[in-house]
Image (cartoon, rainbow, N blue to C red):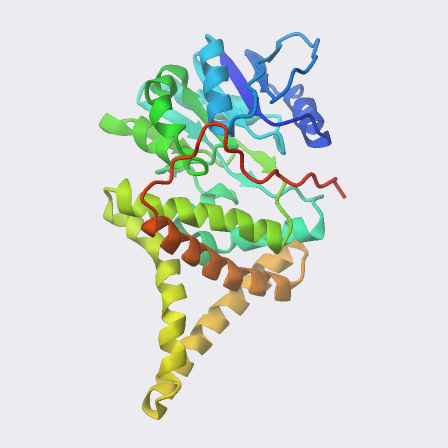
Length: 332
């Protein structure tokens, strides 16, 4: 079986990081070591745990630094605010027995003990109305080949990652999309396995959740204009059209002949949102009203971000330009 290096980029140690390391100790697959990549020096004396001090750089650059430091065949990326199922590595690594598999991974589901406002964010992302073709990132679906996997649960062959690292690490967020797109050239496979499971703590609704959605939308808009070469990616423009349609809807209500069809369209959308919100809220044990509002505001925010990203000439991030710091939310 191949050797694996688990790479965890972070700014400073938190309770979430300790939780992640505790769960890594429980992995049934044992041929792995761990690379911690903090901003500042960190003392760790556990066997198999390495520290690569990166300075004030983005997570994608931290992953590249760790990849250059290890000689492992497979790199396993996970975030410091996520923790793996005991079978995570075992279930993901097995796919690399096929030489055509370059990337493998699975969903990053919401932990059941997250705060209610975090679980609400998870329920919003679990809605097919929100994540559509990327829903597999947030809930366990059937095993299959996919276009992309989240960087908080992604294993990649080291040589393939380093081959394209300089190109993919220019962008954040969105580096996982580019990593998979580059890696999957020449018929290589990106495999999604629902049993390669990690639990990812969500940001709270609404402000932190929507900031994250905004950043996703900005990259997607830039990607659609500058980097996409597939017609399948057109679905990501739908939230932008939804946002722009608001002006037309208000104008249409001023015309009596258009009120009825516009009202029918609006009622259909409200009905679909309500149905999805009730279902996902029941699963997550949260308020369906919050989920419904979250779905609507997520559509608007992602759509607005997509428009802004489309209009921007460049989306690349300076290596030292850090994003807003992630909230540290205790379990409970």
